[in-house]
Image (cartoon, rainbow, N blue to C red; front, side, top):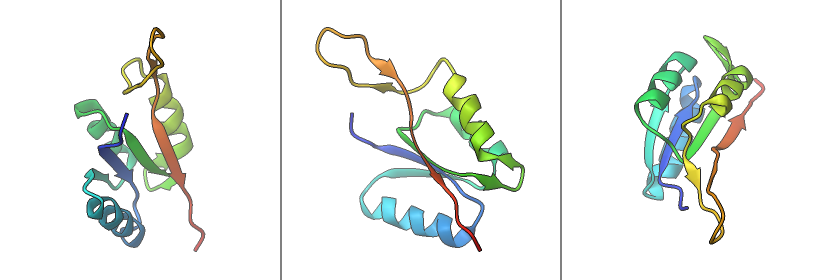
Length: 99
């Protein structure tokens, strides 16, 4: 399954804008969330093929948010070999930067 829709969850403007420019340059559809509340609302509205998730956000821990997202019953389907049931999973990249 090709990646088409990406959610960037990042509170640092420099990192967020860099990721946004990279993905948009490659013609991906990108949504932005600057905190976990916005990310949660975005995930409830729409499904994403890839989530770029910061670990340290102003309103919580990205690792705990990831655990909540993995527990959701409705996640994007990944392709499966012929005759096998598709697996539901997300591709998630966790970002962490030291300053």
